[in-house]
Length: 290
Image (cartoon, rainbow, N blue to C red; front, side, top):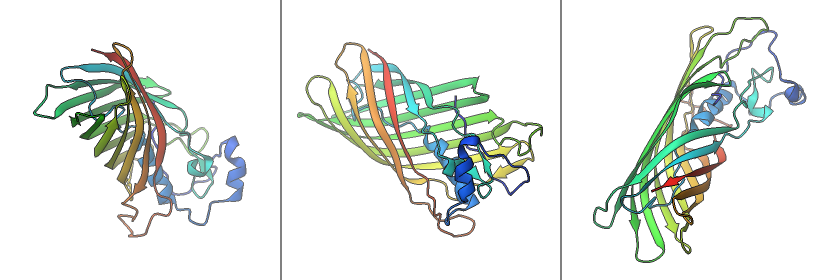
């Protein structure tokens, strides 16, 4: 389902490099390379990949209506420059799952004055896929403001909890025993939204918000807990279209980005992170509307 980030530790002998990354590894790490930065990027990246972005307009449905959908979030493959750790002497296998599928329920309640309140829930059950066992629970609450014209506006709060049990931080030496690791990533944030209805059922929308990431990573091999020294705490944005052109068919697609982390200074050292976290991805939702 989802391979979560692999913790970087101090150097070991006989570390292995994936064949596709051999040429990059031979060039050596860039001048701004730091082990803690690589670790923090991976820890933040996979939590950001599971955030519950809008994937709907400012007013998701007419009051008293809702939808049940399947969302597909692209998990961008990481380059060798991001996968190489231990001063470019080892690669981590982070590109196992290209897409995160997630069932999602969304409902708009009766109006409160001019506002349309709504709530949503998404859940991935603990099914083992690709050697990882994941539980992902997400929720959102929001208020939409339709106008007499084509514009609509809104705000929402969202939160996600991701838990993974798997052999994530793979053995450093061939033949070493493998132990399950435990990763927890949580995100919460707020968005301000605006949409413009074009014709019957087409609503392009944009969202700008703030999202905070927290992570916990426990390595089963040596009972080591990884510390995220620059957790993501910054901007998120969405640009998409919500489509309701066919009866009972609900569609939405968006480009989602986490472009800037305000928390770029290491909590432990006070040093500015030279390789900040970021995410750019695409998401799609298709479902039944009632």
